[in-house]
Structures are given as structure tokens and as C-alpha cells.
Length: 70
Image 1 (cartoon, rainbow, N blue to C red):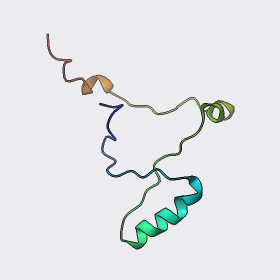
Image 2: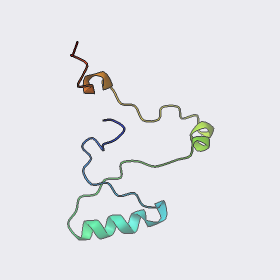
Image 3: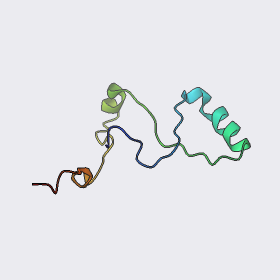
Image 4: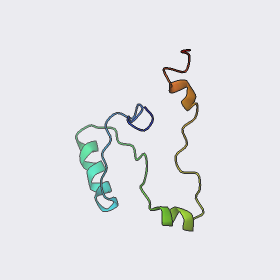
């Protein structure tokens, strides 16, 4: 499930960084609440910046519906 669903974020728009500001302003002008929730970066960029955290999902074992079955 963690790899297939957005897990509660609701609607997510992915736009270029150059278009981000304009898209946010347009949505806000229409009454939407907008949050920037992430940024896609290349692995090379992450390694250059020594960022090894990535995305961490905790307690994944509790998402397994079959975990309690014998």
C-alpha cells in the first residue's frame, strides 16, 4: 500500500519548479489551500549533497493485513 497510494495527501499536482509559483497563485486565487510537499531530485544530486535520508515510512509492518493470520 505504501508504494501505491498517496496515504492521505489528497490531490497532488506535480509541476515544474518554474511553473510552481504561478500554479500556486492560481489555485489560491480560486480559494484552494496549497502546500508544497516535496521536491524530486536526482540520485546524483542527493549523493552530492550527502542526503541519505530519502523518504522514510515508519511502522510498515502494521500495514500488512495478513500479518495477524496464521
